[in-house]
Length: 481
Image (tube, rainbow, N blue to C red):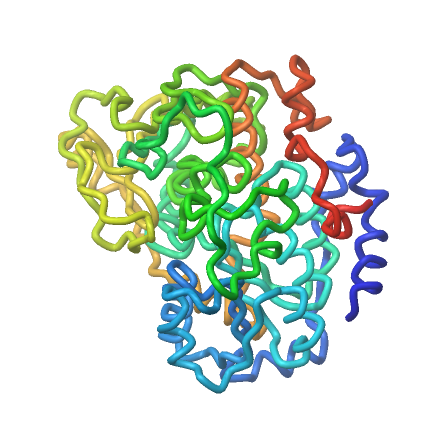
């Protein structure tokens, strides 16, 4: 598929997305019946999936290693805007004969016949155009979290995924294929988890931007671009900024223009099961209750955000309160006990982070019980311990995961499983985080209508649903309706 056909495919989407109206929302949520084609049936018998990896340093390197461990991958192409960077050399040395590209658009246009799926580990602000192009070219896609950077991008990407039910999509919150996923589902089905009224979510480790000056008057000054780096492609659709090392190598997560802060980084690992199994959808209120070092450019040192969700069927309303920052620990219930660290949480390029006084996790309050949980695949426990012992005999057996997150994706590409965190599921969770970031950015209380998908009390907030600024020239094609 060339770029002309890509634009045509995007153009066909316009009627269902323009305006993000109630009718559009109903269409997006409609289930699409689907039967396996003869081609997919043949693919289901294959042993390996041909994969192109986009983003091969840092987290991208970890993804490649994780996928290789499944034994179900054939690496056919590598793509990274900074192929000469030291962070890419290990993977390049491991696959010296594999084709290499700096621009993902060139990868799709010149080598589309060489691969069936892509694995994408790039900065948050370029998730959307890569994912849109992958689906338009008929490629399965594993996309690192957070799924997108703006609410509108998630809306478009969910519709694009529904237009291609034959393609497997998976967002990289790997705990969604681990013990917590199956435990939460089993405990809810058995009536152990019911009538949830409040959730406390917390991530209180140090972050890169905690050393930034909140009184800054402008973005970082331009510095010398590393040799061979495709900075224009790195920027993607975001506003132009001259190169600075303070954007590269994971630093992008700090800035509103490029990343999703700690909420986007960790929320998908902490709140994924709560959001899916409680069928929370979108909140009607998002309020920034507390912030420290609020500014126009990077995320606050600390923040407390309240998300309020309405009743769903027989389930009561739920308030989720998010806490981040070193000085912003949440209140803990009596009998909470110690903060247990999950050693299975994968390392990141955040740098060495000492174990926090309170490790990332959640506390779930129901009308009858309190549950204590961690991040990623960490399982829940009932607190206090006396209550846990009392209920031990009533707890159902939790099935083991048939496949980890990477293998689940590959098996879905082969037609043997369904992905557990597809765009249609993770997209709404990603939108929740986008609303939270808007509240952080505006430092205010916001009221949101989940039916019209608009704020009812703040025009500036509505502008930020699509990022606030139009795509940079040359990148409009990914958003054109």
